[in-house]
Length: 402
Image (cartoon, rainbow, N blue to C red; front, side, top):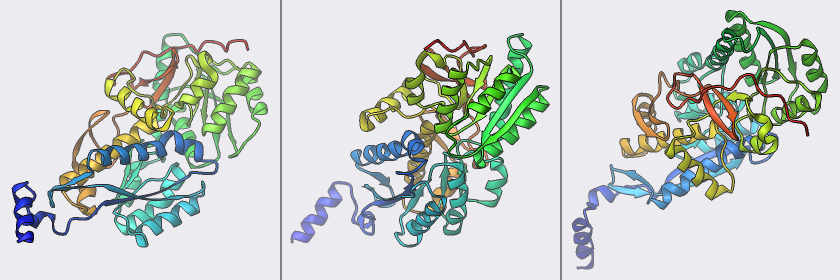
């Protein structure tokens, strides 16, 4: 009698037993990210807070809806610290898939780690939502890796967008045609600089200085002094956060005041803005957002409320978009079916903090490629035709005296 009564109660509540049977207790999500080591700062600003916020908000709402079972199930997390090691990132990715057997594995941080781990995702049939990765040619990579999705695109559009900006300002007579460029000696820096060289040439600019510096550099004074001696109108650096800060600090100290200044990863960090304050007026970098969007401002606030700090203005919002797309894909499929979820990610349209988003051949193309610090905030400025783009400030004001 008790069993019959319980069954009747479940049916009357709209939860048929046929749906409930076989439902998983959770959707198991794994990740291996750099909690320690050189990449930890970038991971904190872009990834780890997003992963925590997403899990909290999904679970607070009752979990992910699996319509095949007419049931919401919570996210269960399995995580590892890759210690900023590419080898560890690959090893833990393999462990999550082959030993822990989680349902989905979220991406690591950094171009190198994502590209190194991609064959493991492909081998096991897991979708790789590669957000913190900027390869030279994402189109070629998705032909090789059918399960890889690139949310920052690839290096060429960033270089083209930046040189379009510089060419427009040159036409207005605000800058000349000389460019100095440096890059960090890793896959991001090398490939981004390669794309920039081609764009510099095609746009008719003169590259008067071109140098590479090692990972972990502690002093860039010789580089800054040599660039200063070239008197270049524009200074471009494809840098990672520690050297983005270092290049800015030593440019101030040495009095390097180019009319256009563009730095790499780290430019979009709130901590970068806090350190240099009003001195950053006019400094450009990758990414940016439509800061006037209430939806984006709400996301920034929720992230800060949970973590105690705001996320960066480039990679972090893209990570959030990728998580929104993953959840919507799982819920549309209605069960844990990686092949079907991967197909939905390829073909579906999704409602996100960026509005309606649809990938083009597994690549996100509709995004800001150039951002700029203006009045204490980092805005998306190019492509200038993109909705929410802020007009560009140029030339960059000179550094303020300390």
